[in-house]
Image (cartoon, rainbow, N blue to C red; front, side):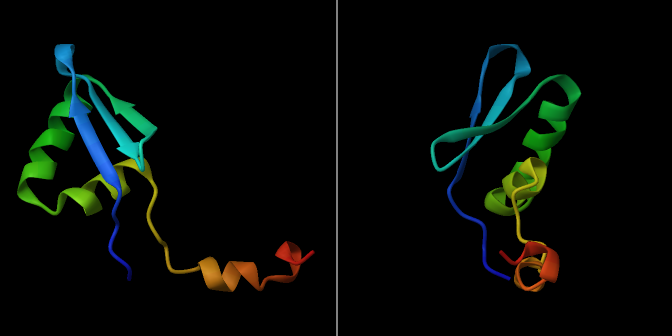
Length: 73
């Protein structure tokens, strides 16, 4: 599986965390979710953690879905 890249995060006042992907805002986390994210990002690969938290990661079925008759035009 290709490695995730292009993710950054910024910690703002009030415990808010904003995650961006290639400079575009992907999601904003507040309160306990932001604290959980910050704890996880320090103990694991930050790029993969951010990809998982934003839902922007490969699932392995993209090639199969592209060839499905419903998706052909």
